[in-house]
Length: 127
Image (cartoon, rainbow, N blue to C red; front, side):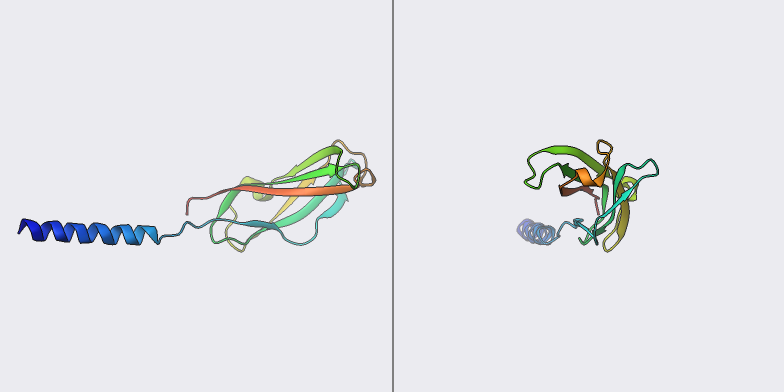
Protein backbone atom coordinates (compact mmCIF):
# COMPACT_ATOMS: atom_id res chain seq x y z
CA UNK A 1 0.00 0.00 0.00
CA UNK A 2 2.78 2.40 0.94
CA UNK A 3 4.64 1.60 -2.28
CA UNK A 4 1.53 2.26 -4.39
CA UNK A 5 1.05 5.64 -2.70
CA UNK A 6 4.67 6.61 -3.35
CA UNK A 7 4.38 5.58 -7.00
CA UNK A 8 1.21 7.64 -7.44
CA UNK A 9 2.84 10.67 -5.76
CA UNK A 10 5.92 10.28 -7.99
CA UNK A 11 3.76 10.11 -11.13
CA UNK A 12 1.77 13.19 -10.09
CA UNK A 13 4.91 15.19 -9.35
CA UNK A 14 6.39 14.14 -12.69
CA UNK A 15 3.24 15.26 -14.54
CA UNK A 16 3.20 18.58 -12.70
CA UNK A 17 6.85 19.10 -13.64
CA UNK A 18 6.16 18.35 -17.32
CA UNK A 19 3.15 20.67 -17.46
CA UNK A 20 4.98 23.52 -15.71
CA UNK A 21 7.91 23.23 -18.12
CA UNK A 22 5.56 23.62 -21.08
CA UNK A 23 3.99 26.85 -19.83
CA UNK A 24 5.49 29.67 -21.85
CA UNK A 25 5.77 33.16 -20.49
CA UNK A 26 3.91 35.73 -22.55
CA UNK A 27 5.91 38.81 -23.42
CA UNK A 28 5.30 42.13 -25.09
CA UNK A 29 7.30 43.27 -28.10
CA UNK A 30 7.10 46.87 -29.25
CA UNK A 31 7.94 48.26 -32.67
CA UNK A 32 7.59 51.68 -34.24
CA UNK A 33 4.31 51.50 -36.19
CA UNK A 34 4.53 53.78 -39.21
CA UNK A 35 6.79 56.74 -39.84
CA UNK A 36 8.22 59.00 -37.17
CA UNK A 37 6.82 62.47 -37.89
CA UNK A 38 8.91 65.60 -37.37
CA UNK A 39 6.68 68.43 -36.15
CA UNK A 40 6.96 71.45 -33.85
CA UNK A 41 5.36 72.36 -30.55
CA UNK A 42 3.34 75.58 -30.16
CA UNK A 43 6.55 77.22 -28.90
CA UNK A 44 8.38 76.08 -32.06
CA UNK A 45 10.47 73.36 -30.39
CA UNK A 46 11.23 70.26 -32.50
CA UNK A 47 8.93 67.35 -31.71
CA UNK A 48 8.77 63.75 -32.91
CA UNK A 49 5.37 62.08 -33.11
CA UNK A 50 4.52 58.48 -33.80
CA UNK A 51 2.96 55.22 -32.73
CA UNK A 52 4.29 52.06 -31.18
CA UNK A 53 2.59 48.70 -31.61
CA UNK A 54 2.72 45.67 -29.35
CA UNK A 55 3.45 42.72 -31.64
CA UNK A 56 4.06 40.32 -28.76
CA UNK A 57 1.69 37.87 -27.12
CA UNK A 58 1.70 39.57 -23.70
CA UNK A 59 0.96 43.03 -22.33
CA UNK A 60 3.59 45.65 -21.57
CA UNK A 61 3.65 48.89 -19.61
CA UNK A 62 6.04 51.70 -18.75
CA UNK A 63 6.85 51.95 -22.47
CA UNK A 64 9.50 54.52 -23.32
CA UNK A 65 10.72 55.71 -26.71
CA UNK A 66 14.13 57.40 -26.63
CA UNK A 67 15.17 59.29 -29.74
CA UNK A 68 18.84 60.23 -29.85
CA UNK A 69 19.51 63.28 -32.04
CA UNK A 70 22.88 63.80 -33.71
CA UNK A 71 24.38 66.92 -35.26
CA UNK A 72 26.21 64.86 -37.90
CA UNK A 73 25.29 62.00 -40.21
CA UNK A 74 28.11 59.83 -38.81
CA UNK A 75 26.28 59.87 -35.45
CA UNK A 76 29.32 60.92 -33.44
CA UNK A 77 27.92 64.03 -31.70
CA UNK A 78 24.73 63.76 -29.63
CA UNK A 79 22.87 67.06 -29.34
CA UNK A 80 19.70 65.86 -27.59
CA UNK A 81 17.68 62.87 -26.47
CA UNK A 82 13.93 63.23 -26.81
CA UNK A 83 11.80 60.84 -24.75
CA UNK A 84 8.18 59.85 -25.31
CA UNK A 85 5.84 57.74 -23.18
CA UNK A 86 3.14 55.94 -25.17
CA UNK A 87 -0.15 55.41 -23.30
CA UNK A 88 1.24 57.58 -20.47
CA UNK A 89 3.26 54.54 -19.34
CA UNK A 90 0.03 52.52 -18.94
CA UNK A 91 -0.61 49.00 -20.19
CA UNK A 92 -0.58 48.26 -23.92
CA UNK A 93 -2.01 44.86 -24.87
CA UNK A 94 -1.08 42.64 -27.85
CA UNK A 95 -1.97 44.14 -31.26
CA UNK A 96 -2.70 47.56 -29.70
CA UNK A 97 -0.92 50.69 -30.78
CA UNK A 98 -0.32 53.83 -28.77
CA UNK A 99 0.57 57.40 -29.70
CA UNK A 100 3.60 59.21 -28.31
CA UNK A 101 5.39 62.49 -28.73
CA UNK A 102 8.95 63.31 -27.78
CA UNK A 103 10.30 66.86 -27.64
CA UNK A 104 13.90 67.72 -28.52
CA UNK A 105 14.08 70.63 -26.07
CA UNK A 106 17.81 71.31 -26.60
CA UNK A 107 17.35 71.92 -30.33
CA UNK A 108 15.99 75.00 -32.06
CA UNK A 109 15.06 73.31 -35.35
CA UNK A 110 14.84 69.94 -37.04
CA UNK A 111 17.47 71.30 -39.44
CA UNK A 112 20.06 70.95 -36.64
CA UNK A 113 19.33 67.22 -36.43
CA UNK A 114 21.24 65.35 -39.14
CA UNK A 115 20.59 61.80 -37.91
CA UNK A 116 18.54 59.98 -35.29
CA UNK A 117 18.41 56.59 -33.59
CA UNK A 118 15.55 55.32 -31.50
CA UNK A 119 15.21 52.74 -28.77
CA UNK A 120 11.98 51.34 -27.34
CA UNK A 121 12.01 49.88 -23.83
CA UNK A 122 9.21 48.49 -21.65
CA UNK A 123 8.31 46.26 -18.73
CA UNK A 124 6.40 43.03 -19.34
CA UNK A 125 3.17 42.76 -17.41
CA UNK A 126 2.70 39.54 -15.44
CA UNK A 127 0.18 37.78 -17.64
